[in-house]
Amino acid sequence: MRKQLVSRISYLVSITNRNLFFINLNKKTTMELKPIQEKFKSLYGTDGATYTSPGRINLIGEHTDYNGGFVLPGAIDKAMYCVIKPNGTPDRIRAYAMDLSEMDEFGLDDIPIKQWGKYIFGVCKEMIKRGKKVEGFDCVFAGDVPLGAGMSSSAALESCFGFAINDMYNLGFDRFELALIGQATEHNYVGVKCGIMDQFASCFGKEGSLIRLDCRSLEYEYVPFNPVGYRLVLLNTCVAHELASSAYNKRRESCENAASYIRKYHPEVELLRDATLDMLKEVANEVSAEDYMRAEFVIEEIQRLQDACEALKKGDYETVGKKMYETHIGLSRKYEVSCDELDFLNDVARQCGVTGSRVMGGGFGGCTINLVKNELHDSFIKRATEAYEQKFKIKPKVYDVVIKDGARKL
Image (cartoon, rainbow, N blue to C red; front, side, top):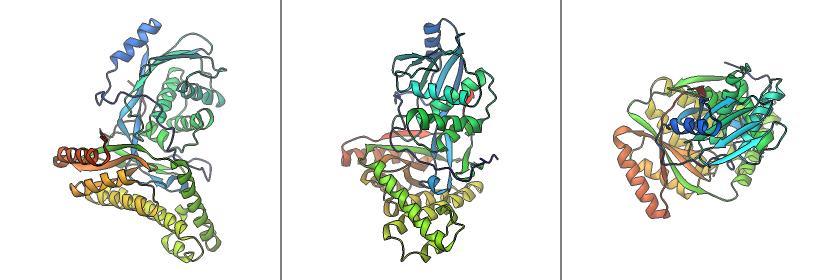
């Protein structure tokens, strides 16, 4: 375990501007590396080393991060890849985004022209801030983390380049520091005040395990995830509703308000993570009905995650599934961040006998994550896609995902 030496870090789950990369959704589950490697050689006349870092899912634990609670992410088999090699210059970076067919070139005192260049530039600058020397390099990158599906392609890109540059120049950063470098890149160069979960999952991912991450102390533990007889499936509603950011901020304010009232009677309560339902009931007449409802969800969700972790350690996936459904009900009725499309897919999952289903991420669109028995997989996908298209006149995108290792050299 590793503990961060700060008592409080604010964690903002970005629900906009998180997946800026331009992925071909028809690619195979595992990308073919040869085209990326061949493109590098054609551009730069030499071979380079290949690195990868994955996207992520979060099985349970939504809107708990900025309340000091826990999350349960895992790295997946969809990732960003880069081929990279020093080019002998003090600070010139030549980068080619293969999925966009775009080239950018910049120095470490320049501002990249392309938006995606800021991710590479930011990682380098954050390493330099930490006292390391980064020199010029050439690179080509591509990925198969689906666009707009909440699997964190941007964190995968930051972690991929962070791991590659660290390894290539032997800079000595550990995975914890690489995750913080990725987060700081988002904050300082992209303008997204994200939390640490996405980068943490990309760096620390472990095949066959999810990561129980304490969002206050940054302590973590691996929780076994070996769902023999089950599959993880994401269904993307392909909708993103307006006002999601402002609605998110309102909910965060509700949580802070509720915690402040509880703190008057229980000074030890800094965040809702420290509160109990009994404490919340004590202030029921002092907080608004809306603030009470939001806080109730968060306190219950933190406990649900703990219960799900215990069930996973026992191999009890049926209980995990029940907790997922409970989370969806809470997100829909108490936190009110679901939408008609997400609720529809959740209802179809329940009707089909799917073990567990819930909205994944901040809400107001995006994906449901589903724990599905193997024998139900095909019939569920068929029914869900047909029914969804009939009702909403659009096809949901389907992603089967498998839990895999984090950032590494190939």
